Length: 342
Image 1 (cartoon, one colour):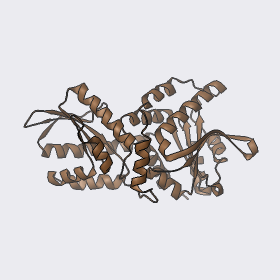
Image 2 (tube, helix red, strand yellow):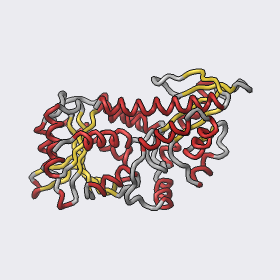
Image 3 (cartoon, one colour):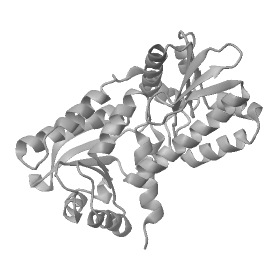
Image 4 (cartoon, one colour):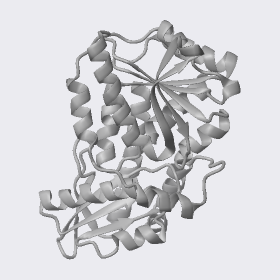
């Protein structure tokens, strides 16, 4: 779990260093870069002395959603006011559509540099900037299998822009009680369901809590049908032949063990196109749980991913400022697939 976060952090730092080189070539002086706070970079134009704040967003897909874009712009506007800056520039690794360009054009004090702008600026900067950008994009690229047409996906995203309430949910989750008693467990389930529908709602339909299987003798915390737009979920549905994803919530004070993984695995049924599960475990997973997840994938082709409460809260807070909530899952999947043995 720690390694996933570290790899994402390293990518963000590579992105920041790349932008520093571009800004230096464009006659900016870096005033501040502190990975612990927002904004990501503060720079001063050498000619005009105007201060600009930069917000950097790593998006894996070629296109990003209206929701993430608007949240990122909102957060940047707040930073411009907070630091008394002359301008704010959002720098993203995806490509703006014409609709998105129209949405952000004309915003007071705000500009957006997308992948096209970055490429042109990196070429002009020299000093290997374009090579660094290409390497960064190559590392992040996903092979999009059956992505819906850009026009349809964009129209859907524009219609269902969701509110910024990730931080609010994160606070409620962190304040919730730990334990297996019915009240605490139910509250944790409800909050996790709200968090997941906020983060990934545009990629799923028919969210069904407390779904009964096996003639009603077993209960799944939450199951949803994939109607994917994001490349991560598109690829997952294609690669694992899954039409449904199961979500399980474990509010235990300690890390989950192989026993909890086995109980989740029983709900997966590849012939019914139900071969992927995500476990939200308050305290993470043990080594025995990791072995059980690897075994389920190796022996039966069932994919089980696990995130802990701290990671979920980080995703929620990041969502409010336009971070892609799929980045952690992408990295977690990469780790599973590259390390599993026969």
